[in-house]
Structures are given as structure tokens and as C-alpha cells.
Length: 253
Image (cartoon, rainbow, N blue to C red; front, top):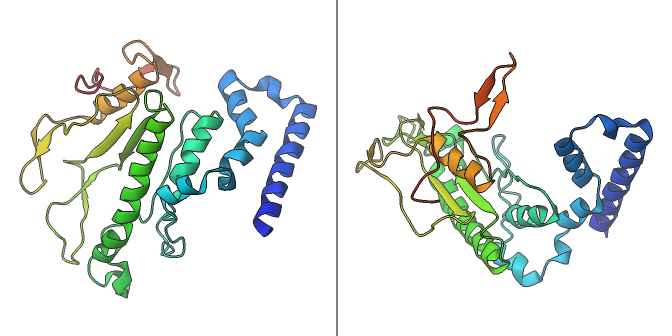
């Protein structure tokens, strides 16, 4: 009942904000995209998308529930797999891009990191990865079952890889030489492993893929031609969306 009351209060606050903004004429100064975003944030569709009680219990169970009490260590996001289910519902409600953070971002520490056994990366991996594997596979399966796999792209990645050798605290540091990404949906050709590294994961040994190629592929899925579309920088000069004339990956499109 408390949760229901909180959702009602949230929806009521959206309604008040919408009426206040309309009365002040602020919507007239927004461009089309900002107006669409504001419309989603102030509509009942957002509250509906966040309400998992409207989802079939089997679907909620398929994504998993996780344990939201185990993430609190000062440098991470909630380890809550239902976030991926909410992401799917947000797309159905009209959102065009949804970004999620999952679990701990700091993977430097090894055994007894920060003086706590339960904070070591080895313990965290054993806890995190099974939960993550379950909710990611559920999301991809769900998108296919709903016929959304051709229109919705899923990208799972970080900013960089991790050092192939362990550090002096039995952890992994930043390693920009090699990274990896998992992509699905978007009408792309699936069932592939593109590229390879040496045996220790230190350097790319086959088909190095640049970030720009992946970004160009995602823009392609959105119907944006990176060879033509530009955005003006703060000095008013047009800049292409990706560097080095990067093109969509032929293996995927």
C-alpha cells in the first residue's frame, strides 16, 4: 500500500508540473525533441512503465529479482535486474534511448579490498555475473517474443577493458588497448564473435574494431547517416558524429 501511495503521489506531481509549465508558456520555447521528452516525463505513460505490477509475474520472475541490499559500497549502481524490464517498458512507452548502470563500477580491488572480504572482485563476480546473465538473456528473449528485436538495439559495454595481468592488490586496472561489447537486436546479424585478442587479452590480434565503427552501426540502426549528418560544436563549426570517417560494421548491418 505504501508503494501504491508513492506512485500516486509521483503521478500527481507530474500532473501539477505539466499544468504549471503549460500556464507559463514554457513549452513554446522547446524544440520538437525536448517537447517529446518532456511529454513522456509528464505523462501517465511513465508511471505506467515503472509499475511492474502490470507485468505478468512469470515475466518478472524471468528477469529475476536480485538483492538490492548487496550493492551499497559507495561506488556502484543497484544490482537490480528489474531495471532491464523497466527499460523495455520505457521503450514501449515512447522513450528512444535508455541507459542503465549495473552494479559496482570499481573493479580494481582484489582479495580483502578496502579491508572487506566481501568487496573483492572475486566475490563480486560470483554474485554479479549469474544475476546479470539471467536478466540480459531475459531482455533479449523478451524483445524477440514481442517483435521488438528489429527496432530495438541492445548494447552492453564499458569505457575500457581491464589489465590482462593482476595488480599488486590482486585486482585489475584500466586498459584502453582492448575492450569488448555485446550487441543484440536492431535488425543486426547475430550469432557472431567479431575480432579476437592474444591469449592473455592484452592486444587485438584479429579484426580490431574501433569505437567509431560501433557508434556508426548504432546510428545506422537509428536511421542516421554518419557520412552526412553533423552537429555544430560550441564554436559553431560542424562536426561529424564519429571520427576518422568510421563506417557501420559490415559484419552486423
